[in-house]
Picture 1 (cartoon, chains in turn cyan, yellow):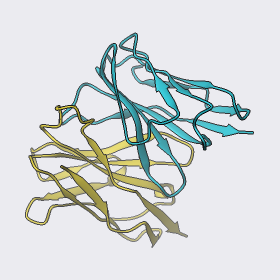
Picture 2 (picture 1 turned 90 degrees about the vertical axis):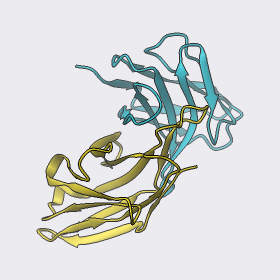
Picture 3 (picture 1 turned 180 degrees about the horizontal axis):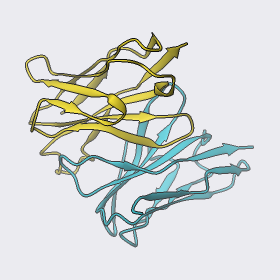
Amino acid sequence: DGGITQSPKYLFRKEGQNVTLSCEQNLNHDAMYWYRQDPGQGLRLIYYSQIVNDFQKGDIAEGYSVSREKKESFPLTVTSAQKNPTAFYLCASRPGLGLWEAFFGQGTRLTVV
Amino acid sequence: AQSVTQLDSHVSVSEGTPVLLRCNYSSSYSPSLFWYVQHPNKGLQLLLKYTSAATLVKGINGFEAEFKKSETSFHLTKPSAHMSDAAEYFCVVSDRDSGGGADGLTFGKGTHLIIQP
């Protein structure tokens, strides 16, 4: 079945450590996105990529990094510079920009302990 | 520039009664509009989409929405609420000409739908 797979579903990190969240899609979509969701705040865009080897910062990119070496993969690294990383992270993809709807993964809940 | 306003942060209805979740948008061009549903600790699932065809759009689980250009609205409705409808709902706009470096998707802040037994 085609879709987006995020792993792991739950992740615990000690303060000061970097951690990488995985996002893989087999929909052959060009565009991929990372969002952060905090209670009562909706979705906030961290990074997005329109094509392989290219990505742009979203509204809250500080403390995060991404790569897009393959069309199907868009991993997100939460660095130690992110002051408040505990949140629910959602990955999405769509065929391209414009009128297309986005398809979402099931999310990763990151908790800093 | 585009924007989305979901007019209610919380909506509470009784099971079996109609549901109305309100969404207003602004867009410089002819937009596509979407409603997504999110259950706790899950990803977002597409309920329905408007892409300039019929203005009344039917989606999954008995939901529908009507695109009203004159009112810049895209309200989500369901004739009879079910307990399983309790979730967070997001209205989203995508602009036709958003390929100039912007990501192209604008999310509303969400409406939490509560179903009373």
